[in-house]
Length: 192
Image 1: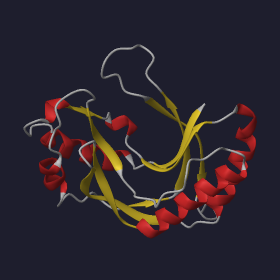
Image 2: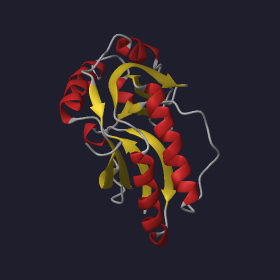
Image 3: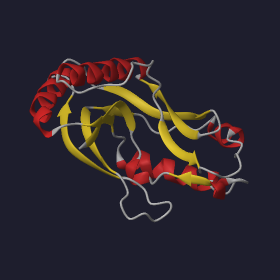
């Protein structure tokens, strides 16, 4: 199954961001972007790709250990940016360093469990809002990122590490979104 480790923002934070994104979708060129569904908004810590069923017990054990070794930390959605002209994202503030350490631990847990991981890159916490559609004229994402520059969500305490399954679209309908389901989660720290 296709899996990744993630931090999942609380529903109130997602709802507030959804209201902000509604304003972004009024900007020129917004109709030429593929907007992600807010029910799938998350901060990916480590992307595992396809994971064999027989590796799941060890992956669960190692992720539980990683979560136990990290304390809850404050986080808020803050600002935004873009990866070239391809991806528009919302950023994070607060416990960025704590989240980076948790991301490193989630990656290490998978490697130790036998999950083949791509090359390690410096972690950039981001929540994907929109992607450029393939085959269409390039959309300038700078005005969208600029419009997010001052955005700040409420702060929350990240208390869990989630293992999420990504169910890719199968209908072939253009614009269909992946569906995400949390398959397991572990409390950070001692669980209190």
